[in-house]
Amino acid sequence: MSEFGSNSSVTDSYDEYVMPIWKSLDVPVERAHGCTLEDFDGNEYLDAFSGISVTNVGHGNDAVVEAATNQLERFVHGCSYVHPNEPVASLAETIADVSPGDLQKSFFCNSGTEAVEGAIKLARKYTGSTEVVALEMGFHGRTLGSLALTGNNAYKREMAPALNDVFHAGAPYGYRCPRCEGERCTPSCADDIEHVIGTHTSGDVAAVVVEPVMGEAGIIVPPDGWLERVQEIAHDHGALLVCDEVQTGYGRTGELFASAHFDVEPDILTQAKGIANGLPLGAFTASEAVADAFDAGDHLSTFGGNPVACASALATIDQLRGGIVENVREQGRWLESELDSLEGAHDAVGQTRGLGLMWGIELVDPEKTGPRGVAPAPDADLAASVRDHLRDESGVVIGVGGYYKNVLRLQPPLSMTRDQLQRVVEALERALE
Ligand code: PLP
Image 1 (cartoon, protein in one colour):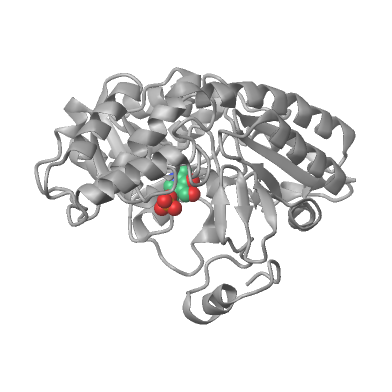
Image 2 (tube, rainbow, N blue to C red; image 1 turned 90 degrees about the vertical axis):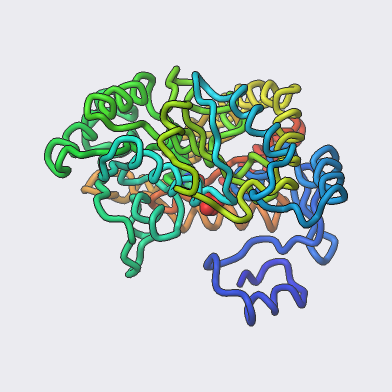
């Protein structure tokens, strides 16, 4: 439990009755609105992490609250998939409308990890193959199936994943890529997937699963052409491309879906997190031809696509399309130039990278040697202390992540204003001093 945010019966109860989640929890929240969190002592914080890209249109968003409340009043007991209802129908139609290409049919569940596992089932049924290729640094969830796809072994601990036949290829992590020179990968970095299929699998591959911009790995943006090449490799081997947009979906990168930046239409698209602005909802979407591989009963979830969450998603998407994605592009351009300056001014900032309002700041110790004997070393302690400084001295909440836990993560609500972002950047500058 964090020593931070003093009080209260909440933190005590977490210690006693809630299974451990994070090593140190962040600000305990009494209430939240827009981009502001308030703790139990009445302290306010500017939220630049949005619960890991969840509250995209802001905490307690009025239109989302209204949509959820209206839906609750209409039928409380109908919170299940069993009875066809209007919010599920409208949301499925809306997703078909906003999704790339001919992605048309959706299956609704409750979370990202379920969306990923469902997508794998669908890819297996459609292709008749079983093997799956994912990326070494990728993150796709922590239930046993999705954990098998998650490439970072640090998440696996001693718990053996349940899904067999999963193989991992190198990620386009240009800053420390063993295959590429300089600080950027090239599209041919994707050829490691070809290599893994050729040397590790039996060739019977159902899906290649990637995040178009990697989140938990430390905000890794692949070079143009990389995702296209990944799809080409997948298709050459009769496999589907699954784009896991659980973290990048719904406006985060300045497009409704990050795959649009790379002109790629995935075969299956997974979504969750920001889709309903905090209500539990996940989905995976495929073309009619792929989706129809499922027979009725092949996949089901009692609470999947509950009408209250679907109504909230409709209100969320409506606002995203009504100007918020435009705000992401505008603020993202500004943030990019501010972070470039930060990189130039501080030796401890190894690289800044991102798209829209999804940014990573890689902190390093230039005096030390890092993985594979290459300097500079990742500096996880510095990242943790910068995060704590921001929170305690400036009242700004950010995330820390990345494969080496040395990446500061800025993923604010997408409605964040320039003034608020400026406050975040100024606080960062002070913390890095
Ligand atoms: N996929 C990606 C890309 C994610 O970032 C996450 C969560 O961070 C998941 C899947 C798992 O989502 P959930 O925590 O909703 O199960």
